[in-house]
Length: 467
Ligand code: 4AD
Ligand code: MG
Image (tube, rainbow, N blue to C red; front, side):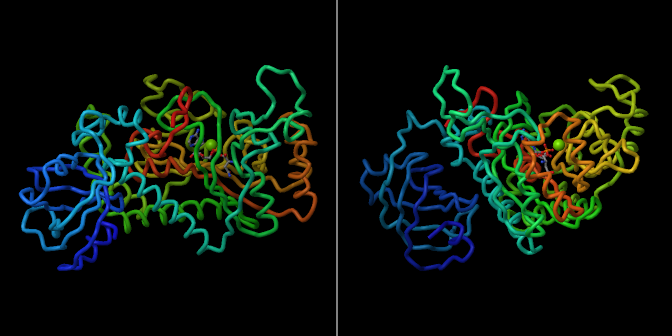
């Protein structure tokens, strides 16, 4: 039986067997056992006078045990029930002198080096349970809204999205100068940077689809917000314009965060405390104004601020950090690409709320976004979150065949590469929209962790692909 179940519905007086890993063993008597099903440990009380000493010595932090005994009300503080151990078996030893995870505070940097063991810590247990809950909530949301889960390919033969540098996929031996036509697929192929273009094909037949899959970007961004391999959720909807797209994205984000608030209380409370402790170590002006749970509650219960790129540029041009040249990239004129310092200023200082920016200049956004009547801006939208910056990027898609064909030519993509994409505009085209949510950025937000490498089990980043 799982510890989570035992603590939720304790069957006092019953004899049960529990398996898990020892978190600590105190006074040769109290085992704190954790099986990962919940943050809480189960206290197991051994009578050391009855047990074999050599066996007792094997109960060390990290050892795996099967414990059998009666579940009783606990007399001690800190837990409601405990097991009076009648027998135990050591399933796997963890020698003290070698086991790196001792019951003390380890730095996140150190834990990243032992990512194979970090799921056994309170912090990573909480993070990965919340990661699961978010994934579950995402599928739930789209299912209840009538979307179909759609699988875009991971290996792609098109190089069209332009969302980032691509990883090559090849079976050609190293150091040969063989032609791509001799390669496995008979052409050059890559790992996908986004499932969107193939997602659109699904939406143009099934109506509303969403992808939830891994995406890969070989950009050399060594930041706390970028991974080379990350998971993305990309809904795509026929007959949705940009307004409907923004409404959906806001409702969707609130739903997933509410799900975590409703279902991950113990883990959230633990991370809330962790977050607060971390803030104390920061200089006053860098501290978050809200606690973790407070921040999540704020997001689900307030409207996101919506404003156009043009309005945002006006605010940024006239803001203090721009005038005092505090920004690394100064905002001088319309058309400037927004950097994360600008996004964070808008969200964290100016509006103090999630912000949806729309109608960006055409030349800083992808070719497939719908051109506005002004012929200068496109129907793009980005959602910016406090402490994160961009969490969602999306748009209404260009549905007009001639306009799209021209755009494809203008950015220099050979038409043969995108003939299939263009055909959806030639045959039965319609207004449609979609967006992409970076899953790890959502997990980062919901857990209050500071580095994206700590919200995915095995992060891939420049010069780092261990495990
Ligand atoms: O803004 P992006 O590049 O948009 C697209 O890929 C579109 N095809 C989405 C669509 O309209 N269907 O990426 C979408 C989101 C970003 O807002 C960000 O949250 C996340 O993906 N993202 C990353 N997350 C982690 N590491 C990276 N290197 C990321 N790059 C983007
Ligand atoms: Mg983007």
